[in-house]
Length: 40
Image (cartoon, one colour):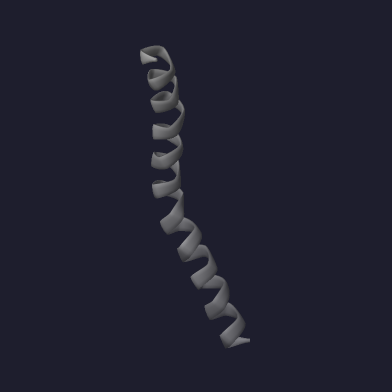
């Protein structure tokens, strides 16, 4: 059980961290696209 938990943490934790890091840049990217469409 311990080994499985460690594997899960090793997989889930980086995924969550990557998601939290990329989410703002994705939001900024789509925000920039929306502004571009409005200006055209």
